[in-house]
Image (tube, rainbow, N blue to C red):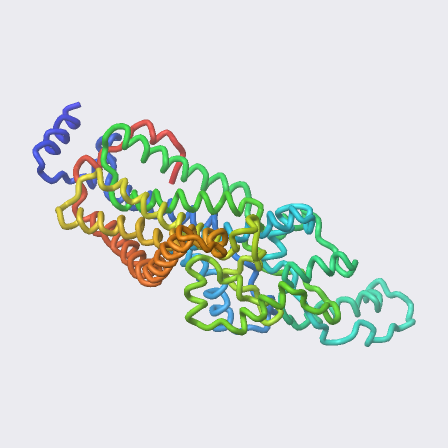
Length: 461
């Protein structure tokens, strides 16, 4: 009890408290190392569990050297993980777009379950060409020798080892559905899709317990009027967004390494939608690709027949107008991106009720939070005003012409601001809050070291 009175008196006096050994002396105090470790461990576990990348390019890894293997790992595994750490809102938009495509496929009877839909659009089927015909080696009529094995088994083993096949391109949802309807291809069973997934209940339980503990202790600190560090606020934003990503990708197979090889002849002619994606891909440039990536529209300009592997942020060639006929799908994606980005910025306002080391740090954090929250608004306004053009386009009345002029002005201003304000302001807000989150650890207020005793009974790392 005397120790508690001592620490409380020192905290009220405003003198610095050395809390490096507080966790060992009194259970109701935590050290700076505990704060950093709990935040970083929570971010890593949530990011690792929620990431469901697309299937990488199917190559024979036995023929790759160390440099090629490292390059493939950085491109197919490390890049999506870093992207989720840096921009979880962008990954959430990507997940929402994929879920939209899967729901469209289920509604139109193209796939039996969501797992099949996700497996198809993530590159689960890949067209291959055989390096040699199946019947090139004649069978020997010699009797079966149990010590050597049959000639059929020997030839089958040689084919399995040598004829890996040459990957041509992944199959999009249009080609897979047509091959299934024609009887050329058969979808795997749901248990077979689960068998290819790398997720397990132990990892899911560990992440769930760690996430639950972190959220509970953050809520408990606010109830007891104890401050949260800036790093804990940033971590809370990551936790909430990764939880949303995990829910959206709940039925998506995780970290599938190899697709199903499809050996078939010439594919049918492209349908109208595939031709549209092909034209969009041919007309796109690096500039349009960058701006299409921000709202998650990069999948709208990808023709899978023209690439060797499913792109990292491929969303599955979403339908052009679904689920709303009056709103194009790319406009719906931009609206989702604006809302998600604004919500991620609004989470950072939680830290404004905690004490800062100086007034300058407080102002910088507030500006960063405002920029992240306000920057997507012009884009959202432009998307909302776009469907209003249709009822006013054919109007000849004075009010109709005034409405068209107002909408035109709002549309031009919104597009102009979104092209400049959204990238610059949002990146500035994200960068400044991340820097201040770690900078604030150098001057943590004494009250932040006080822990909620009963939260220690929750299993956590």
